[in-house]
Length: 438
Ligand SMILES: [Zn+2]
Image (cartoon, rainbow, N blue to C red):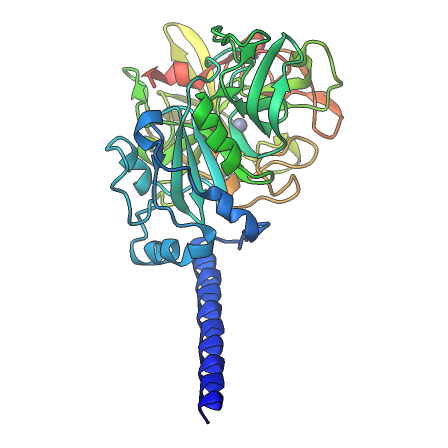
């Protein structure tokens, strides 16, 4: 009698546990559906225990550990999303510095279950799990902006991980190296054969973390994790008489001018030959953006309008404005537009700040380039951005003759990218053109 009661209780307990587990699973699924267009699951949920951070080093290393919710306890994070949709940090934000608290109010840049955001403006790497900030890693050093091998911006994946790596160029060793894009790694402060630290600031585009942080980062990152590298416009100050091409408080920079993109080129001693460089500035809206307008950066006239189709060279709906600044003609190009303002025609005068279009994701195609993870033959929400160029001629492609090798290996006239530093081909950096500081 007693024995069967115990068995019954055990059955009830175990059964109840499974129902409970299933509920969490369902909640997990539902929240994912609500939070994103696609559902993502961790590739190996057993590995998620490696997420926890060794305790005790929070103050000494400047490393802030946030909500310790791991994927085995993802219900905590999910409730946070549901109850307070604008807090992306979870409940435990006490350990956050006041400077870092701003990250709680910006949605993650991608709907990935595990996401590393490299914020090059603030020198921070944010780790999101299921849409919630879990950890913040300070960056010790990144490559200087404007060199041909600047730290790349864009959507990437964690690639190979190597505990010890020897540079192929100089006899320098790096530890805890994590690949995030082609030749670009996140690793510790490199050292020479005798153990002395490399003091040179030339990083070849890699991101350096202090040794203890590099170890923790190495343990946190898993091959295949999503990566977005970007700069923000939080500190951008417009020059006098210039106007913002988009609402600066609602957009971020998903690809900088000069950012290196691996092309179909063959291996060469000078890696420069293997990369093409972005000739414009890609401005993407935050997911909660309400103002998707595109605005004239300066007074001028409409010089050209190209509609999405065969003649767009992958730029989709495009407007080119002509400006006269200090007696010189200069052109601003706005690409991938969703729509152009009704009634706007070639030859029309526009005032500075006038709305000329709405940001979109038109264009692309396998014949040109691939931006974003969903391939070259489809576009998704995350592809929505403004491609802005400042150039010396009112043309879709390069103002000067320039041949690029596309990812598919075909040679074409460069559009949106340059085979070398873009200023050699008649482009200017839109950030430097528009802003006095950023
Ligand atoms: Zn672009």
